Length: 226
Length: 346
Image (cartoon, rainbow over all chains, first blue to last red; front, side, top):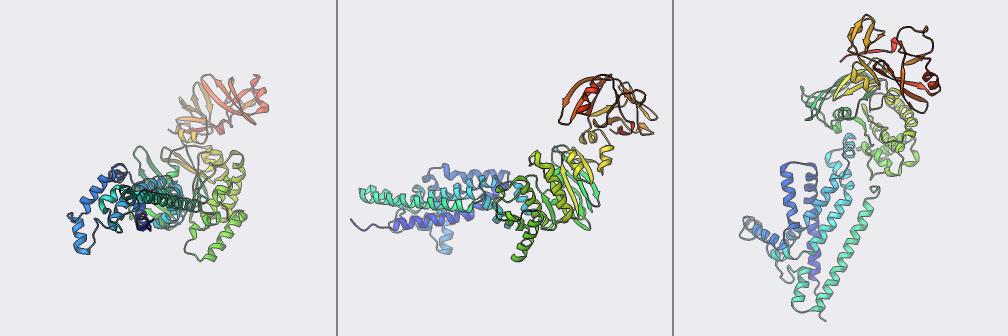
C-alpha cells in the first residue's frame, strides 16, 4: 500500500477551523442584532442568512463564483490591489465553508439570545456595566449552550462540505482537495481501499471534535442548567 | 428626595405619573398592568419617558426640557427585580461583586464578605443561584444592590416569587436589613394592600397608568379619594349617593350619617368590610343601624365574610368566626360607624 497522502485531512481541518473562527466573529454580532431587532431589514437579513441551508451547495457555489470570480468586480479588485485570488485557492475553500456553515451558528445563537431573561441583562445595566461588558460577561455565557451547538453544527458542516467547495476551489491535489473531495476522487479512481481509510479517518476526527466540543460546553455552562 | 414627573405613550397605554417624596418606604400599589413596574424602569433608565423629569436629591437623572438622560449604568439606582434576576452562571459572591467592577480585588472581597454577613448568607458564597431557596435568592439580590451604595432602592414585587408561608417571615427580615443598611428613598411595588400597609410608610395608588393618590398609609386606607382608589385599597362596599343633607347622605333608600360636615364633596360612599359591625341592642346606636338579611357566608380561617342585604343594598362584613352564630340568629342589627364611612369623588 502506498503512503497515504494526509494533505486533504490537513486542508479540511484548516479550512473548517478557520471558517469556524470567522463564523464566530461575524455570526455572533449578527445573531445578537437579529435577536434585538424586529424591523424589516432584520427580517430580510434573517431570510438571506438562512438561504445557504436551503439552497443546493452547487447553486451556492455558483453564486460565489459569480460574486468573487476573476471577472467579478470584487474578484478583480482583490486580485489587482492585493494579489489575492479566491477561485481555485484554499482561500476560496475557506470562504465557501464559511458561507455554508454561518447560518447554523446564527440560527442557533439567535434562539439562545432570545431565550435570555431581559431582566437579567437589565440587572447588569443597573449595576453599572457597559453594554460590551454585559455582552461578554452575561449574554454570551448565558447563551453559551446555543452558541456551542451552533459552533458544533457549523464546524461539522464546514468540515463536510463538498459541493460548494468543489465549485469555488476546485479539486487540485495538494492545493485545494479537501477530505470529502479526496474520498470522491478515490472512489472514482476505483481505489476502494484508500476511500475506506479516508472515510474512517474522517469519521474518527469528526467524532473526536464533536466529543471535545460537547465536553467543553458542559464545563462552561456550569450553573446555568436548571 | 425623589421627584418623578413622567409621561410615556405606549400605544394603547399611557403612563402619566407625578409624585415627590422626601424619604421613607413608599408602597406603589395598584392592579397588574397599571404602570407600577414601568415607573421603576423609567427611574432606572430602562424605559425612556416621552416627556418629564426624574431627579434624586440634587441630581437630575432625566429631564426633557434640559435634555438630560443619564444612562442606566451611571444612575446609581438599586433595583431588585420581581424574579430577582440573579446571574445564574455566577456564584453568590460573583453576583454580589458584579456591581463593584473597578475596585481592587481585595476590596471587592471585603465588601462582598461584609454584605454577606449582613444578609446572613456567609456560608453560601460559592453556591450558584439555582442552589438557593427563594428567600436566599431575594437576599442575594438585595445584597447585590446594597453593596453598590445606591441613591434609591427600587423593589419590584419582591415577595411575589415566594411561597405564602415564608412571606411574612421574610417581610420582617427584608425590612430590618433595609432599615439598618439604607437611608434613601425606597419604592416598593406591590398589588397587595396588606403587604404595602405592613411594610411602607407612604402609599401611592396607581390606576390605569396614573397615580391617583399619594399619602401616609393610614390616610390612604381611611380616606381613598375615589372609587378606583377605594377598590385598590380593598374596599368592597361602595354605593352611589342619591342625595345629601348636612352630615347625612341617602344611598339606596337608606339614610347614613357620615363624619363629614359637608357630605356634598362625594359622589359615592364606602366602608371597609372590617369596619362594619353588628350591635345587639337597638338603643346602643340609633343612627346607621339597620335590620338585615343574611345572603351567604364565606368561611375564612379566623374571619368569615358575611354578605348581608339591607333593602336593595348589599354589604360585605368581616366578622370573627366565634360571632357568626350570634349574628345569623337574627337578634342583631347591622351598624355602620359614621367615622368609618368615607366619601369618594368620581
